[in-house]
Length: 234
Image 1: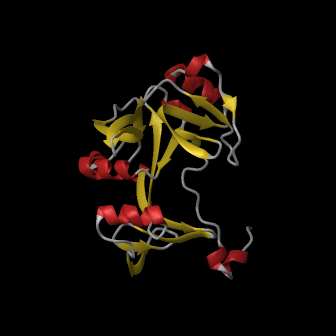
Image 2: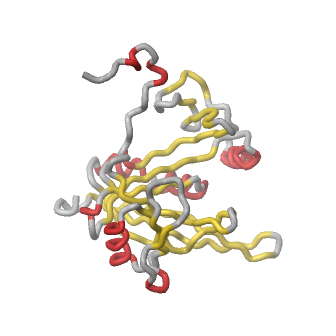
Image 3: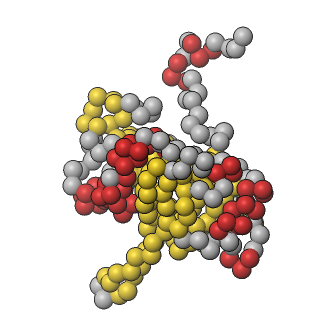
């Protein structure tokens, strides 16, 4: 029989884990140099499993044909590889595998979270309060930048189309452009309509523009939903 200590203090009860036991690695769109974030034009993949990293390199290549290297992290995914692949074919299990929310974090953790209209509690349920962030997209970004408003957080769980047996990978981003593109392309709606495993492409796109007479560029993630995944892959 298990301990019943959390029956007397349900607020302290540990929350159910989501996908944690199945996640074999993470896709990352950047890295840090001297604690400064730097974006990448190709995917960086991290994992704690050497066999997973070997399989990723076989599928996606690696810079200078380097093997997976250790990197400093507090997580279990202590191996990294800088791939040569900007766009990868994936399988998304269901609409629930794509999650979006707005989060305001402080020094001691999460201050509030919302869906852009309603605030949510720590379990993601309606908290009975309206969103405190500005209503316009531009003002939301400005509030996020000055620390008074929520930041977007998009999390995607998926498998590699060409090697689904490796397990589930995770990609997380706070990209405003990605949030806008997901809404423009109605990615959540397409996944809901498919109502099952979906074939898609997850990519990184370099965007170049001019600001104050200077050429600038940034990398944004992209998600293209193709359609239902073939049965053998799913």
